[in-house]
Length: 278
Image 1 (cartoon, one colour):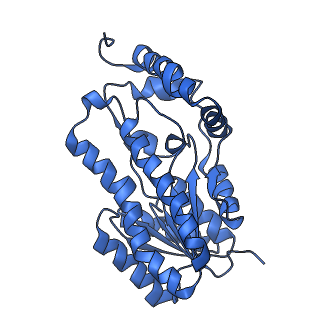
Image 2 (cartoon, helix red, strand yellow):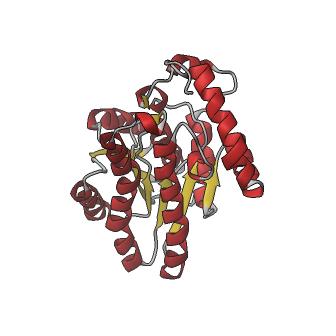
């Protein structure tokens, strides 16, 4: 029998991208899935598709930046299903460009979704999981949460925070019956590549670069769900992400220093839509 059979899983950002692929994979393994998303119409359509394929799924509206909405989502899940076995704090946004071009409003927005959204999920679900003595919190970070990522500093800041939150909470939660994992996918072929904010960068040229290799969401989801099943602390998906993380751990000064300057220089020369920095 599947580990996920008849288990209840809430996935934020569940209407598209990695979140949707994870929902589909969980449903295939017998889980009862709640697709929670700010775009409830899209979540409803995705849940209907999962049900048509024989899975158990329903949609829920949530804005993860609103702590009260996240609390209500978790409370309603317990009321409707009697349990919450897995919480995937997956909702996220991205912003590419240099810090010198970013506004405080942009900083606050990405912190609100990527970091506070995860905190809101933890605050709502963790005490309830402790009370039951079981549960698994899975937070989506990024390769950018493991290694320096010039050109995506705000995004990397939030994802480093999510990695630190998750790996530290895992130590606290272990004796209380609750598991915690963090997911660091790498570059995945999701709608986020079109919806993210690009500051003074040519999106089409960047995405067309043969060095930018996109992994399919369903492949990513299988790796994530297998990692959760095995209770891995850090689930790194792509070979590129694994390689860069290993390189950074072995040669942190090289990666953060010289290599970081080279990467930033290449980005400015190849993708910038304004004159090169002096």
